[in-house]
Length: 260
Length: 252
Ligand SMILES: Nc1ncnc2c1ncn2[C@@H]1O[C@H](COP(=O)(O)OP(=O)(O)OP(=O)(O)O)[C@@H](O)[C@H]1O
Ligand SMILES: [Mg+2]
Image (cartoon, rainbow over all chains, first blue to last red; front, side, top):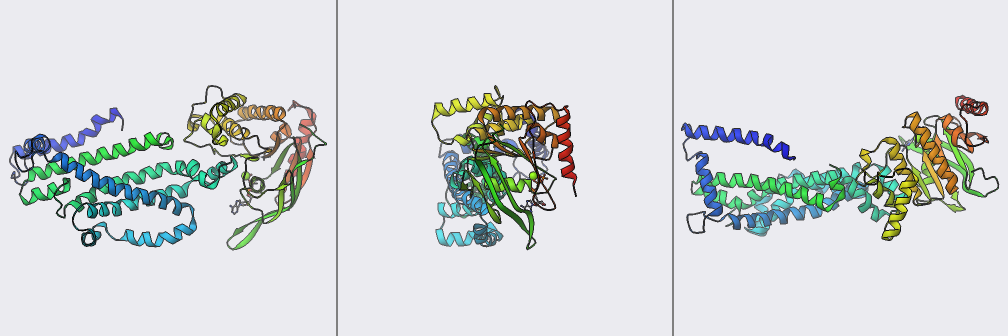
C-alpha cells in the first residue's frame, strides 16, 4: 500500500464510524446492543493503558496480545514449515502429488471448526488446542498456493538453470523457489488471515488469556463495549501482521522484493 | 570462422525423435546425421514445425532422443551442461535478478573479485554498460537477448545453441544483434548452431546452412555459404543464395 492510498482506504471506515455515531446519538439502538463510539474508545483506552486492577479488563491488553500472538505465530509457522515444502514438492513431482493429493484433499474437505472437539480431547484447553486449530486451517492455502506456484514455473527456467551448471537440488533454491515466490507469498498471506480467524475460535473454548478469550468473557458479563474493543483490535493487529509478513519476506528474499 | 580442417566438435549420428501423442508416436526427426567443426557457424533453417527446436533441445540435453546419439568432442550427450548453452527465443532471464546478477548466475559460488571482473567484462562485451542494475522487465527485447547471450558466454560453452534468438526483434535491432554475434564469434572462435527461419539471416551469418525438411524429417540440403565477410546484403551472390535457400524451403 502506498502512502497516497491511505486517505482513500480510510474513507469507508470513516463513513462506518459516522453512521455508528449517528445511530448512537439518535438513540436508535439501545446501548447494551451497540454502545456509542466514545464509550468503546474509553473501554479501549482502559483495556490497553490503565493499571491492572482498575476495573475488570483494565490493562490486560499486553498479556492478551502476547498470548494470542504466540499462538498465531506458532500455528502459522507450523503450517508454513509443512505447507511450503509439501506444496512445492507436490507441484513438481507427479509421484509426490499422487501420494499426498488424496489425503490432503480429504482433510481439506473437513471444515476447520470440526477439529475443535477432537483438539480439546487431544490437547485439553490451552495453547496446544489453539495452535493445532490455527495450523490446520492455515496449512491448506499455504500448501495449495505453493503447489500452484511450483507447478506454473515454466520448464524453460529450469532448463536455463541446468545448462548454466545448477544441479537439481541447488536448482530448487536458485530457480524454482524464487520463480514460485509470488504464489508462495500469496499463500502465506491467506494463511495468516485464516490464522487469526481460527485463533479466536481456539480461544473461545475457555482459555484464561488472549484476545479471543476477552471477547468471550465480555459476552458473559454483557460488556458489549469490550467485545467491540476486542473485535477492532483483532482487525487492526491482523492487518499489521499481514504487513509485517510481507515486509519480512521482502527483506529476506530478493525474489519477493523484485517480483510484485 | 571458416575452419575447414578442424575436427568435428558436434556429431549427430542417426538421430530420430518422435513425440508420443494420444498413445501413438509422432515422428519429428528421422535418422539425422550431421557434424559441426570447431569454430563453425552453422544455421539450421526449416519451416515452422519441422523440428528445429526439437533438435536443439536434444543437443542441449533437455530432451532424450528416441534413437541415435549426439556426441560433443567425442563424449555422448546425456544431460544439460554448461558446455552447451542455449539462447532461447523467448525471454528466459531470471526476473528477480538484475542484469549483472543474471549474467553472473552461471558462475555459481566462485570467488568475489574474480566473479565481479568477469561479469563486468561480459557486460561490456555485449554492450550493456550502465545497465548492470536494471531488472529484465525494464529492458527492451534486444537488450534482453544481449543479457541472454552474456549469461551463457560467461560459461565459455564449447558450442553455443541459439533458437531463433532474434526472431522477435525489429529488423534494425536484429541486424545489430547479428553484427554483435559475428564479432563475438570471430573473437572467441565460438562454435555456433543457430536455428532460424529467416533466410536472409542465415546468409548473413552462416558458414553453412542446413535445410531441415518437414516432410522427410531429414536434412534436405547442405548449402555452404562462402561469401566474404562482412557480407553485403545487396550483392548478387548474396541475393542468389537467398533465392536458392528460399527455393529449397518451398519445395514440396
Ligand atoms: N512437447 C511436445 N509434445 C508433443 N509434440 C511436440 C512437442 N514439442 C513439439 N512437438 C511437435 O513437434 C513438431 C516440431 O516442433 P518444434 O518445436 O521442434 O518445431 P520448430 O521447427 O522449432 O518450429 P518453429 O519454427 O515454429 O519454432 C511440431 O509438430 C510440434 O507440434
Ligand atoms: Mg522452434
